[in-house]
Image (cartoon, rainbow, N blue to C red; front, top):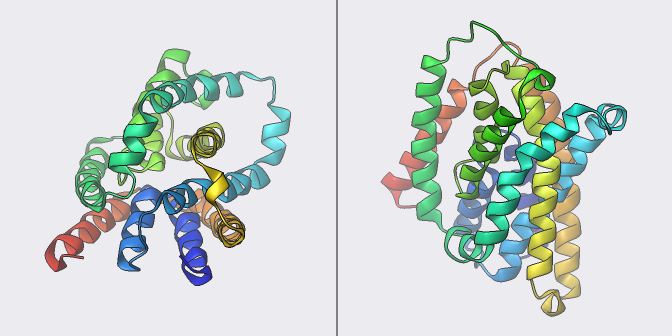
Length: 258
C-alpha cells in the first residue's frame, strides 16, 4: 500500500462509515480494485482508521457526551454495546481470517442488505408511538446490540444494522441515526483496541505508521462532513436511495466480475 492508496481508503472510510452501505465492505472492494494485497497490516489498517471517524463523532457531539457522562443514555449505549463486545471477543480470529477481505461475502451482503432495506422502508409505517433513546427499555437496547452483531459480516454495515434496529424498537429516524453515531464510539474503539492487541505490531515499519496517520486524518475529515450532512438528510428523506445503491453496486460487481 502506498500513500495515495492510504489516503483514498481513508476517504472511502470516512464517507461510508456512518452511511448504511458498509464501510468495511467498500474498503475491501476498493482494495481489490486497486490490487492491494489483503495482508495482516492492510486488514488492521482498515480497522484502525475507524478511530478517525470516532473522533469526528466526539467532535460533533462533544457537549452531549460531556453533559451525559452519568446519565441513562450512556448506560443504554453500554447495554447495546455488550452483545458485539462478547461476540467479537469470541469470534475475532474467525472474522479476521475468513470474513475481512472476502469480496464475495461483501457483494452478497450488499445485495441482500439492499433488498432488506427496501422491504423495511416499504413496511415501516412510522406511525404510532415513537420513542426517544431515553425512553426505551434496556431489553430493547440489548436487541439493538444484537442487530449490530450482524455488521461483523463485511457488507452488512454497522450503521444499517443499528439505525434500522433503533427504528424497529420505536425510535424515530433522526434519533436512531444519532444513537447509531454514539454507539459507534465504544464499538469502533473496542474493535480497534482488540485488533491492535491481537496484531504483531513489531513487524510494522515506519512507513506503516505514516499510512495509519494519513488514514486517521483522512477518515476524520470526511466522516465529520458526512455526519453533518446525514443528520440533515434524514429529517426529510428515507434510506431507499441507499438500498438501491447497494443493490446496483452488487450487481455491477456480479455482472462485470469486478
